[in-house]
Length: 491
Image (cartoon, rainbow, N blue to C red; front, side, top):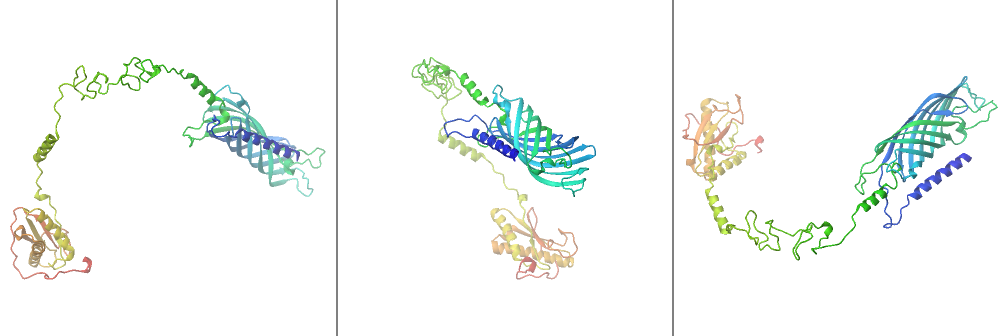
């Protein structure tokens, strides 16, 4: 009970002192010289052993992880987790302990009280903390306090609180990495303190005492952290590596390096001599930010003498700064005349007749009646013809391979005639601009022998010397008259 009270009191005092050191002064009365710093992430590897009633057998093995954050340049908090496996052996007695724990420690950087270097190369740490552990122990030939218990067996996992004390030394390899050697002692609170080796000296004239777990280990420590979001500055190393007075020293050095202010202005141009590149400027002359007399047009005649301070570049000037040989400026009417002449000289290319592409008008099987779905295509043909009054178009009727050749010739003629009549009657196209041709089944697009909607069409092409073809011989072919349609076409 006494050990528990002392450890709790020690932990409370250390944390209270560290937090009081962090207390901020009222806003606007003090400038903090402690920058935002990085976290430490460490990997601990070592050889744990139990000092108890039975001699420790080496080597045990163990490891852990920890994170550490500075409270100031001296104090920091460290949180970690560990796993240990140890073995004790004496005569015929043997025990094996497995330990898992988590902890919180207050770490004191002892030698960072000195301010002689900007960064510590070696850091001496002492630390104390508390934790929670769960351990189990397998034992052989060890009498237990319970007479009914066998001398060989296993002590099931038991959860306890414990105190941690230790010290170590760390060596700084780089701003991002350091390596340390530490030794930590663990002492368990309560009745399980003497059971790490499972021997309570039962039936022996030896006083029962606490078993102590010891962990000498190597720490590989990495500093993590990028940019401070508030200031935009790169975070420093953890404060326990940095000299608390380094920023103060840098500020004093920068202050000492500043020149002594001398307000002398010999020529009275408003620029003090310390930064005046021309300390004898004429009285009343305009000067730039370096105290040099202004020459706005860079003609080597200063403005206070220049009767034309903005002379056009590229011309020589007289002693008064006036440009010589400058041609008469172009007037607005001159610009309009030049632009009009250039536009008039532009020759726009005439549209080529072979540049036009016309859609095909398609028909139902054995029909030359125009369907509503083809009206838009004929409207496009009519639009081109109206916009190009000199253009002539050939309408060529076609069929698929169903039916005889003579029948298909007449049907293709009827289809071409129906398309031409529609353009004349509905869109007012001059009949003389439309040349009727027919091809029957001889010019298929899709090479199939049966019915095909793509082959049942009227093609439109720009006329290139074609003549109109007469109706082929043969009886009437196809259905005409009223508009024809089907379900696939939408009606």
